[in-house]
Image (cartoon, rainbow, N blue to C red):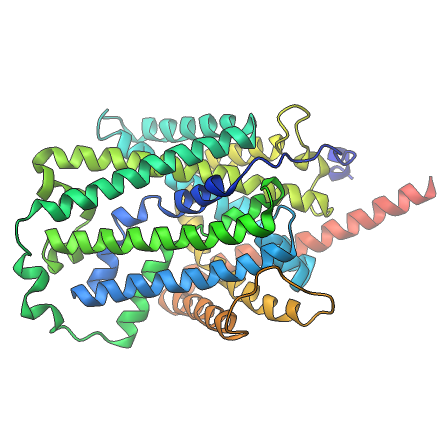
Length: 454
C-alpha cells in the first residue's frame, strides 16, 4: 500500500509537438556519434587488419543499422505516440515485454549510457583542466544536470541545442576529414600498397568486428521515443531515421578511411586513442588538444540527446498504467515530463558517484539486442493483423526484419559465449523485472477493487 501513496490522477496536459525534421535528424546523428568513433575503430581493425576489410565491416554495420532504422520507421507510421521501442514491443507481443524494456532502460541501460558518456565528457575536460577522479565525477554530474535543466524547460530548447551541437560536431568531423586527406601530397604506401589485401579474414573475426562496429551505432532508435512531440511523426520519424543513419555511416566510413590513410593498419589496430594519434599526424603535438575538444563536443551532444529521449518512454509507461502516474506528469508551462527528467538525472548521478554504471552497463548493454530481435519479429506479427496499413513499409517483405532479427540474436549468443558469467547475470537483472511487473499488476487490481467498493 506504500506504493499507492505515490499515485495521483493522470495529468491531462499534453506534450508539445515542437520537433521538426532537422531536429529529428540531429537527434539520430547526435546520439549515435558520441565517443565510440574516436576509440572503437581499433577494436574493429584488430580483427580485420586490412583497409578493404575495415571499410567492408563499417559499411556492413551501417547497412544492418539501416535495417533496424527501417523497421522502426515502419512501426513509427503505425504508432504515432511517444515511447518508441517500448510501444512497439507492447503492441506486437505484450505489455510485459514493453515493461521489461522500460525497466532495463531506467535502472541500467539508458541511465547507464548517460552516466558513461558524461564521464567520458568529463575525462576529456580533464585534458585541459587537470582534475582528480572525484572532480571528474563532479563535472560529469554537472553536465547531466545542466542538460537536464535545458530539457526541463522545453522540448523546443532541448531539440534546438541538439540541432546546433550536432551541426557543429558534423562540421568539425568533415573539416577534419578534408584536412586529413589534403595533408599528404601523395597516397601513403601503407594505404594503397600491394600488402593491404594479403590478410585473410575469418568468419569469426568478421562477425566479431561487425559486433564491435554495431556498438558504435548505438542509439539509432531513440528518436522514436519522442514521436508524441514530433510534427507529422508518420513522415518525420522515418525520414530522420533513414537520413540520420546514412549520414552517420558515411561519417564512420570516412573517419576510418582517414585513420588508415594517416597511420599504418597495425598502428590503428593497437592504438588506445586512435583519433588523437591521427590528429597528431595532421596538426602535430597540438592535435591531441584539438581532438579532445572534438570529443567534448561530441559527447556533450550525445548526452543531451539521450537525456531528451529517455523520459518519453517513462511517460508512455505511466500512460499505460505501468509506472506511478506522478512520474509521467507533464509540466503545465514547459510541457515536458519534468519528474521523469529529474529522476533520470538523479539515478544517473548515483550511478556515477558509486561507479556501478560500468559493471552494470557492460553486463546489460548487449541485452538491448535481444529486444531489437523481438522487435523485428514483432513487425512481421503486426503486419498480419487486420486493418494494418503502414504509411511506410520496409522493402523485401520479411527478408530485412528476419535478417536483422537473426543478427541481433547472434550478437546476444556471441556475448553469452564470450562472457557467460557476466552476460547471464546481466540477463537476470533484466528478467528481475518480471516479478515486479506481476506485483505491480496485483497492486493495481487491488486498488481498482477498493475504488469500486467506494
